[in-house]
Length: 310
Image (cartoon, rainbow, N blue to C red):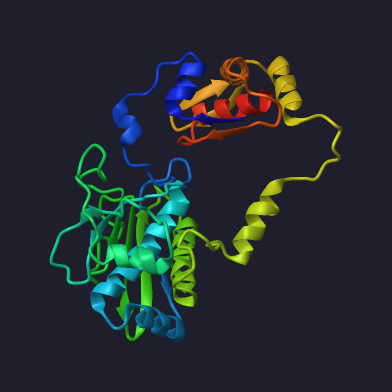
């Protein structure tokens, strides 16, 4: 047996009112990696690809400027997919000719298929309607600008501005943001993700576009090892047992926070228990698979914990 948990299902199981439809279909924002209290000063990053990689990308495009636009757009959408966990991400887009103003685009099929498939779909990118269900009218969350023009130092009103183009014979990736959105370190990582996506595309255009690691070896080591904390011997207790011990000891302490909302251990435990009981009453057995498909947030935390409890 398998179960599927989405936002509405979890809200019902937890006994909460489901968020409105507008929130469910609104574009997923980019993650904020800012230092608390940052003033919102401009941050910038740049990466220049080696000549061999630039030649490889031109070869994939067959010397066609419109196809090269699609190559850059495909890599950008791959990065957005990784940043937002969306299979069909959308972005505001300015083509290399610079004739049209920023407009939201993105293939309905997302990144399904090979890089070559995605590039072919993006040669004539389908515009999405602005507003609810579209890419949110200007100011846009994210802009990919291939026109070669220089943006405002902070990327304008967008959370992230990315410019890609060929300068002096080499592909250059420029990114702009603000310190209240992300640090220069994180913006530099994002330019690196774009470079890696373009490298994957040039190496094997027939490989699945959604495959391949965007993280550098150093960042992967940092995420998996440096952030893992101190190693401690396992005492035989599972995560749920340890969590419930914290609930008993500190029921009023904050257990999880997301944006401007927080839940205590007691509140999170109550939501998770309701979800666990609902799953069991619907026939969930030990070792059954449960898919939790929803935006990261407090409800996601309760759903994941509820699955572990069940």
